[in-house]
Amino acid sequence: MRDIEKVWNKLTPQEQAEVQRLLAAPLLPDLLRDSFLEQTTFINHPSKMKALLGTRRVGKSYTAGLYLLKTALERPNTSSVYIGLTRDQAKRIMWNDVLKTLLRKWSIEAKCNETELTITFSNGSILYVLGVDDSEAEKDKLLGKKYALAVIDEAASYTIDLEQLIYKVLKPACSDLGGTICLVGTPDDRKDTIFYELTRDLPVDPPQQVRRRGWEVFTWNTERNPHMREAWRETIAELKAANPLIEEEPFFQQHYLGRWVVDVSNKVYRYDPTRNAWDGLLPDYGWKPWNYVLGIDLGFNDATAFALLAYHENDGHTYIVRADKWRGLTISQAADKMREWMSQYPINYFIVDGANKQAVEEIVRHHGLPLQAADKHDKVSFIRIMNSGFLSSKIKVCSMTCLPLVDEYDKTIWNKRAMERGIYKEDLSFHPDCADAALYAYRYCYSYASQPLRPDEIARNDLEREKEELNKRFARQRDEKDFLLEGSEHLFF
Image (cartoon, rainbow, N blue to C red; front, side, top):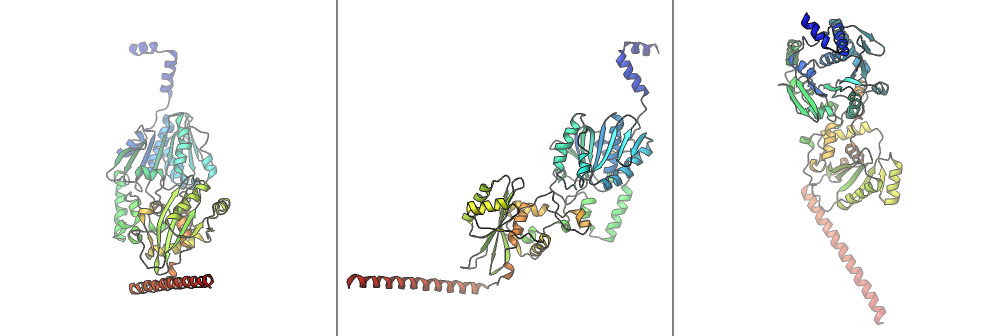
């Protein structure tokens, strides 16, 4: 006791007050007591930017809930936020099933506001639950606050610009408190997000921990979760019994194997390299020329994109010869690009998105280019027509000269929430500029009206063409001779 008194007397008044405060503070519950190794490692890792990829039922949302409560209790008078896709989903997944369950389990004193979806703790900390993917009002609630922790759940499925949300909104909001940002999710159809770039080729079995782009990235599957392992195994066994080929299904590979694959039924365009690839050499049909159609999608912040298609009256296929795109082009630079392509290909038609009427009129009047406004009526129906061409192998694409287009065909998907309502519209978080340009041009390709020729017919046509050219040359020579004779008569007589 005397030793304690001696130590106490050596402390400054401020140090004594801090000791008294700590002694008076309630003991914090050991929230990670029942957690498994991977879960604990993820939560306790000191990195300020973390990502977690896992299969379904791996414990992602529960991990997020534990992390949020732990941060709120250990860091008094701070704010933390859970971000879901929509407010309803966030309330259903995190608010009801995780956070309120944990509060009851650990008898944590807190005030829950069901209207605002906020939890206020006795130590002054506040936890916000939001859904930002379809609500600007919810997104605005993120502004003007300082966060000790921000967790973005279902990080693979956002239609908003997730990278902008992270680096322009959350990163500054976390800087004052030295806060942490976490991305949590399962593979989805989208391949244009930062979450995909961070986790794209990482297996979930065995668990992984790597560092990418300043992020600490973790993966594991449901086998690592002892609370769900048996139920998980039973579910997989039932699925395989019902369908022995279930492992080939995209949803199974995404949700149960943690792989980044795209469900073909969700892809806007049915391009398949095994079916639609082409070496870039157009077939030879003798003297009859190919028809070239250039589709143009004008943009500045979004890219200006060109797609060059070719068709022939004697060939039943449409060939996508070349596609490319550039950001930040002025009107004059776009016109220069058109002339450059004209010098390389005998383009018959220039089909342009007429939404920017001023730009189109400028190119027509001042640059003398024969642009035609694209027919954009009923886009979804025409995408289906084009998909029939892909599925029947009637559309061929030269991947070597169409790399941006092929990439867009792989990444462009339908908006899932709209599809659930029976509405087909593109997921607007990704801009398929080259794909739009190719669609504009495809409407003006008439390969479906072609009349295929046999090789002997092509040879006969070439012979007839040569005869025709020969007859024309003889006719010109005869006319020239007659003209000279007439002139000589006037000269000598």
